[in-house]
Image (tube, rainbow, N blue to C red; front, side):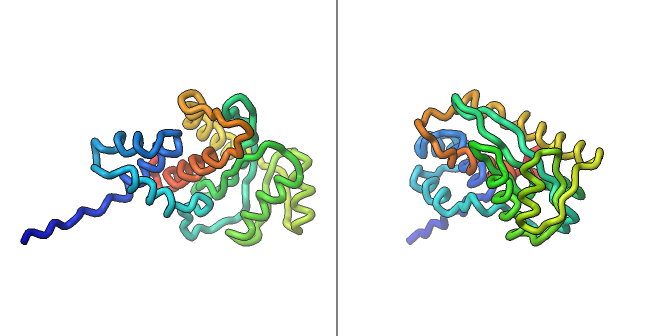
Length: 201
C-alpha cells in the first residue's frame, strides 16, 4: 500500500490566492490562476478565505512613539471614498488602514480609538483637519500638527499606496449597488500585510 503525503500549501501561495480573490476573481478563477504554482481546488481557496481574518493585520511588536495619521480621497466604482492611514515614524510601517464614505469627527474618533485599543495610547500627529483635535480631545489623547518630517513621510506613504492600488478600480471596479466596501477593506488589509512583511516594494 502506497501512502501519499499531501504537500502543505506554502503561505506565499495562500497569500497570493487571497490577493487575487480580493481583487475580484471568483473562487474557480482564483484556483485556475494559481494552478501554475500549486494545484488546489476552489473549495481550498474558500477555506483559506474563511480562515483569513481581515480585521487582524500581521502586526509585530513594534515600538511606537506616536501615531502619524492622514486621510485622502480615492475612487471606488462610481463613487469617492475616504482612505484613512496611520503609520509609525521609525520603520514607516502601516499601523492601520480603513475606508469610509464620510470624513468627520466621528469617523476620525473611531479610527483613532481602534489604534489605541491595539497599540495603547500614544500622541497623535495630523494635518490641519478640524475633525482630529475634536476626536483626540474626546479620547483624551495628546494631539499636535505634523512637523515637516512627519508631513513628508505620511504624504509619501499615501502616494505609495495610491500608486500601487489605482489599478484595482481600473481592472476590478465595484459594480454592487449600495456596496459596503467590505471587499475593498479586505484587499487593503492584505496589501498592508504584504507591505509590512517586505513582500511589496
